[in-house]
Image 1 (cartoon, helix red, strand yellow):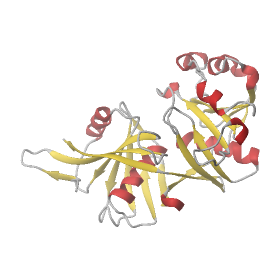
Image 2 (tube, helix red, strand yellow):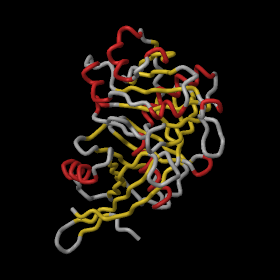
Image 3 (tube, helix red, strand yellow):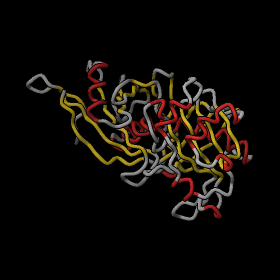
Length: 305
């Protein structure tokens, strides 16, 4: 059994830490995050959390704060996220990772749990087939004029004629839908000039670029069981220091809104086709997105403060 937090003789503190691959059921794929559990009365500082985030050197480290009761039965927790360099307001995959630790590692028996965060209350629940469901606001994009961002588009694609649609969300996520003849293999092989994107678009309107295509058996958009993805995508955010995000929930609040309208359906099956890759089950519901995914806990350890 791992130790959560307890003082030891030399005055140090032992802090349980886990590494979880989110949005996958296969180790070493999906999007990895570290998760630390903090008991009441343990005065871990923001500076210490930042140091741990830097030491773990993953895109995010989540800190779960038990407010009352125990990890097995509580249904409300505090939650904060740290990159190696800064605290962030919201992180989908690290929230999924934190929930996986509570449900699967700690044996939490609640069907639904809530996290108090800097972005407000986030609700997480158990989903079908042992998945975990996150409830996020939907972020529908709106059409953009191609000529207004042509310089940025040239860093994203060698051939601009394969673009079928260009839309931008209020959260700064640019959606580039490619023509339906584009195959999964072609999307995965594309090499955007990520380092040039920031210089090409410095107005602050764009904070990330997603390339996406409609799924079909003909273009190779099927999983390893032969099920067809409704859409697949890749996502790049060099404005935030992320060249390519392995699997991101926030991007799918935009992509799901777009594809739900285009395909006239509210339940969608999607894949983010980074080198690690991950699958997402999406339900659009009253301007909210229920985003479900798997997770794999592949490391347990103890951090000494």
